[in-house]
Length: 199
Image (cartoon, rainbow, N blue to C red; front, side, top):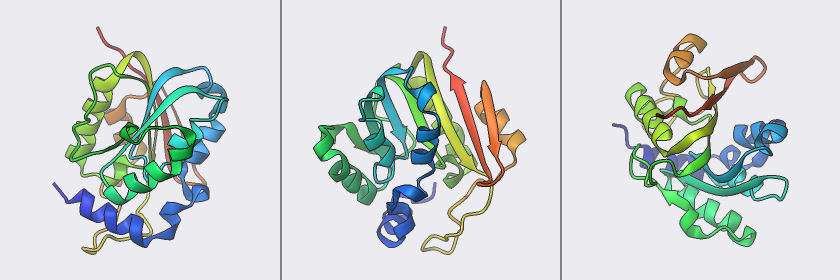
């Protein structure tokens, strides 16, 4: 498995675009999906939360959510914790990940958001991440995710493109099995919604 922590500690520290809300796909996607998200309540996890733009947004009274975040980058987690400190989000709600296994109980969340993160993983890690999302979502809970379908404009410190899994829409549909999806041609982004089905 790649050293995602080292890669994204370096990227977050180095690339200013990862630290601006106007460049955050999740921030934009949540604003555009306000009506749908305002009908969801309970705990919400932003997986791959970066510096915390989505976690901060979901603290707003317009949403009926208790936002949490998780990221593998220690630099990002520290910045996210600082960002939401004045929003009364405890630091313990922004988790530092060690790998693709999420440190949360089964069926813990009503909503998991995951924006432009999975394409940064190797294919096997995408599958493990999807299994973990399914595990931590409650029955009837919602996954709201997006993936970028193009190479990144950035490389990591080892010279590899930051987007490790660049696949077409059919591949992502087969991996995520969304209930609803749309393709944003302008951003070359695939946006997906999936309801969690458990027996």
